[in-house]
Image 1 (spheres, rainbow, N blue to C red):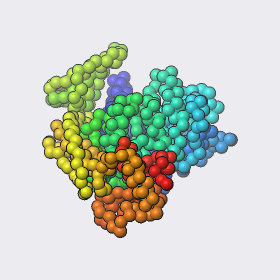
Image 2: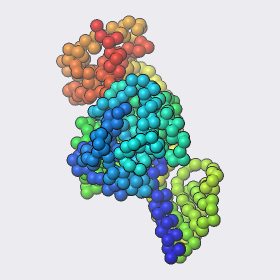
Image 3: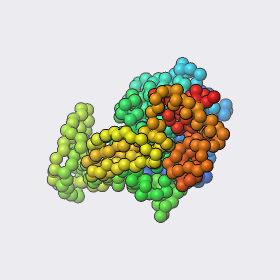
Image 4: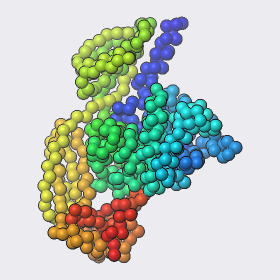
Length: 537
């Protein structure tokens, strides 16, 4: 009986080890939940039973500093003062956490009354969050009862960046008082820098960036700017280990643009960007869309999880050994082996074998030792398999400058090619990037920029002239356009010529499309609206 009970306990621990959230994994899937955007939303607990997602973001705390919550059909009960009291969500949070999922509370959203007038009010609100949803004890009303969220997500879309860096830094100081691990995430629009959370991303320790590559001109495609965000992670972010997530709609009805129905394109995209050490996985809006969207009898979120496994996969063998097991198995592999020995005198241990390039390391407390070698072992085991991989690459970049009058695409050939697309609108400076990599490569998209002028006044005059055309709805001022030409619409949308027709794309919140000048270079694209008046009469 004791042996059977011990085995069951270890099996539960093993399940969490094999399928629980792993911060360093590149195969994580994050889903927003709570707004029932597909009209078929299931309970949070039901979704968490699937192994296809690892992080759930409760959407939304849409009003603050005075707290207002909305979870569509998932919560209708409230406290006497009107604040939602979501006991079922509370139970589901604890269920999800027991299944190895992370559950964060998302603040903001596309609509809502939120924001701060100064940093002090933001710092005060950090304590409100901690007391109401964390381990604090100063709140009389807790919407999720005794359940504690694993952190907070900032989906701020109102173009007011005041206070969020101070809020996160204050939260970090509160997190430090606990032994529990908490996370901070942000959901910026793909145009960089984001008008709402850009300051927070530059001045606070953020764990995840769920970058919205939808409803923007920088969606996956010709203008995909993953490299810009990768540069941010390596050069700007206070957390150099920040994990970047490819943010996508969960179906065609989840967003006006950016949904990738072509699974081969999605796999190609992920294979290219996942070589980055900052890649963390895929985030989707939202759970109701991603689970109900069926392709060949399989949910979209399941396809995404499979693609992540395929793109980032090798083979992993995980074995659970107990003193009471009687079934033996033999495993031979050439990989990393990590052995965890409990600090107590327990009669069991875990051995995890996985593909890795990590060098030997040790850790105290749990007595973790990691070695890399080809080994053959035979032991009493309960075995399971999973999929992981390591993509290793080196990138060499060369730049050439020339004047040209047509779009240029150059491809550098190595084991895998990296493609650079340069957009031009007579005359442009053409920048050609040649990439050499040992395994995978990234697509690099450069922002269109004009040929340097002899004086800043000439570039400024050109920007003013173009903006006058845009305001009049004349795009580039010509009767026709050529593939690859870019301009702006009268309503401030970014415009691209596609087979002789202008295609408009909405800029991110807080930005608008216009021509501008910087360092004698003319630039056309989405930029902060507050900067536009310098380039109009």
